[in-house]
Length: 200
Image 1: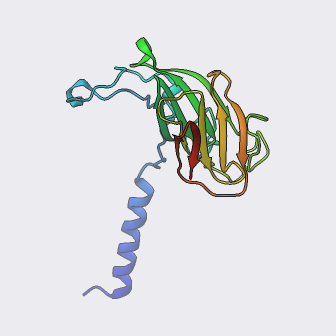
Image 2: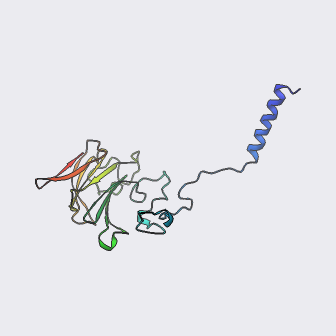
Image 3: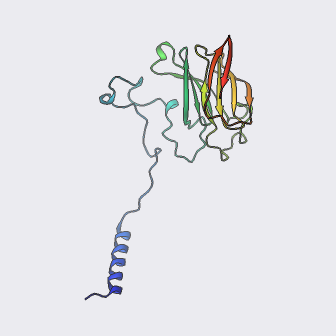
């Protein structure tokens, strides 16, 4: 008959033996060699990606590990709106303008952006420029009036809140107004009696 204490020592010895012989494991992240690629053709069905193979670097944020600021280098996209072939996207720290007109429809080109991480690109920002702070997600939504590509509204957390942008020059959107005190997670822009309105 085996006593309780000798059985306990045998189990403990077995656990220690297994634990000491196992190789150490390390957490994996996307930066460990993964490259963003389009889905294989066998999975396409009726919907097909515009790009096959490797995704262009401007649209690839697989090297984001959760340790970097979610700025223009590692955009975490939250919404998009398409007007007249221009794609307006919002992401964690800002907004981008993509040219998807004509031949660019399948492979849009990044034309312009505004990012709170870059000093002076937003009228007001929740943390000092070039600082990560604690704000990991500031901008949540973007929208333009139907059929118009010369103005967009971005919606987010204070002090980014609600901002209105003149996007006539796509490479350099110009901030025209910013509310700094309200939390807006989504919004909608439309034209009523020839005037553009943003609803949040």
